[in-house]
Length: 181
Image (tube, rainbow, N blue to C red):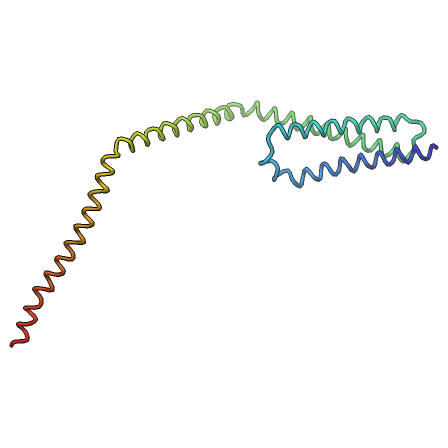
């Protein structure tokens, strides 16, 4: 009976370890691709699920560590897993502190970027309105320019054709005069 419990405890530790490892590896592989696709809400829900899974894992490891009937191997694995979870938590705290420190140190720049972004949007809106206004005011002039350009092109074609015909007409008598000599 004790060996069955020890085996069950070992299987539980191994499956939890594998689940945590698969979660971490899966995240590393798809983080860049999903980062652009995920919304912040999805990421926070994912983090909450991970934290719940880690809490459940800690409950199991503590249960194994306090179970007198657990084998030494199961206790060793539970101790190792507990230490890894502690290290993970310490790293998370350290990273959060660095993030807060960064945000505090660079808050002025972050605020300035936000202001610049808002100002750029305002300028873009004003330029778009001014561009539309200029186009609206210039509609008649643009239409007149198109009309004048079309008429000028037609006139240029007609003039070219007429001039070419006149040159051919004047060139014939001169050519005929050269033949009579």
